[in-house]
Each structure stands twice: as structure tokens, then as C-alpha cells.
Length: 269
Image 1 (spheres, helix red, strand yellow):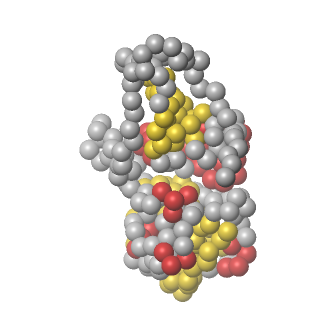
Image 2 (cartoon, rainbow, N blue to C red):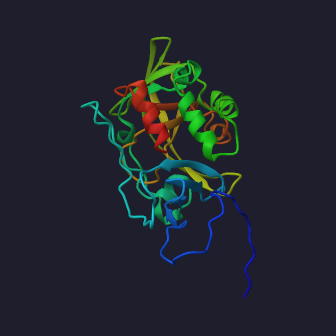
């Protein structure tokens, strides 16, 4: 057996091994997709993205951290300043990232996406989501400006609102509604360039306005029945052609959420 160093990252100043064995020195813990390293002399914790092995931020603390342990959590987020605060649980984090077995996939009903939904595209354009882009840049491979350019393509849409009640889906473009009735039309599994996968849950128009698309395809990082907390939606009249669309994925969050809450939700991902 042998070991090789695949990557390295400098986080702290050198620590002396002189002195007592119990003197505080850097310790390591792994929490989900983050590696956490203590830095006693600086009074902080360093965060490292376990996938990209890039620094993902730091947490200042009082005193000198001596030891560290990671414990489980639900993944829920809470905003105590708003009684209508939104919280959610991504469930299995690996599934959310696109790593799952075919046997885990289950059919879903349109009711999983029921509600009143707002597009986040305008928030990206007016700068509301700039903190999200900066947050992504801390642990990603792009600058905040590059992330914003990427999401300008991804979020782009002229459908600012969607409502889903029963099997009726209504699209609002410049305030003008187009309504249709939809029925389940199966699901498709897509494999992406970096090896992870996604599931498109597909619904076909059975009747309604001509302006409403013949097909809608939901992608929300879930692969079994569960209410959506946000989703990416693909729509058009070509079922197979939509499956080839990977760069533009209009994204919708509950209309009840404020801009501040949407930023908080995105920062938690």
C-alpha cells in the first residue's frame, strides 16, 4: 500500500511542536461537504470545500479553540425576524448533489410543486443576489462576476410568475396569464458532464391556452415525492429537445418569500 498527496492547501501560520503536548494546535473535523480546521493562535475556524479543496471561508470565535467535533443536523434554516419564515430540509445531501441509485427514484405528482412561485431572474439583474454570487466565489472556481454571468444565462426568463393549483398551471408573462391542464408524462434521468445526475419530472398539456407550452419539465434536486422548496423549470413543445437544454433553467421560489429570505435560502445551499 502507498499514499500520495493529491492536493494541499495552506491555512495557518506554522505551529511549533515545542512545549506541552496539550498546548492548543490545529485540529481537523469533517462536516458534510466542509473540512473545518481550527487556528488557535488566530482564534478562528477555517472552512475548506471538500470537493474543490478550496478555502470556503472562516469563522471567528472567542478564545483559542482546543478541539473540534462535527455533529449531525437537519439542514433546516430559520429566520426568527419573520413569522412567515421559510425553512426546508434537503434530505440526503448526496441526492441533492446528484448522486443516487436508480432504485431511489419514485414517480411524483404535480402537487409536489403546487403553489404560487416567483422567478428570481429580476433579483439577479437588480443586484439583490450579489451577496450570493460573492458567497459562491469564496468556495468556487469563478469570480463573483463570472458566477453572475453564468446565472444570467441560467435564470433568464420572461415568465415572472407561475401558479400551480391541482392540474392547472398558469404562466404569467408581463402580467398576462396563459393557463393549461397538465398530466404526468413520465420522467427522464440525465447524466451531466462532471458525473452527477438529475431527474426531470415531465408533464404534458391535455387542454388549455395555445400560449401555454405542450410540455413542462421540473428539476428540483429531489427524486421522490416531496414538496418542492424551489425548482428549475424547462418548458416548450418538443419533449426530447427540452432534455438537451442544460444552460437555461428558469428558477422559481415561493412568492411568499421576500428578497432577503431568498438570499438566505440560496446562501444555505
